[in-house]
Image (cartoon, rainbow, N blue to C red):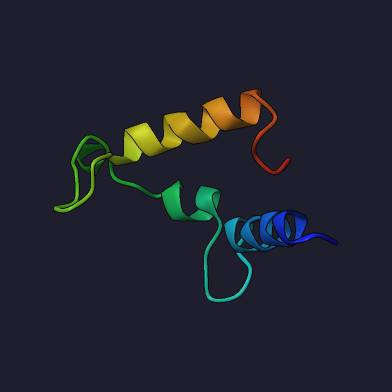
Length: 66
């Protein structure tokens, strides 16, 4: 496995809840509506923007399949 495939597999592992990380769906499941449009200081995107990026990446086949 070359280094780019190794990195992809590791990122997939982390995104699916591997290690000390929670998967995206679990992290976003109970996000309260009033918080969905707020931004954390120091970050450029709010939760809605991150969610839309996930949807777009999945549609383009650039995100791990469920």
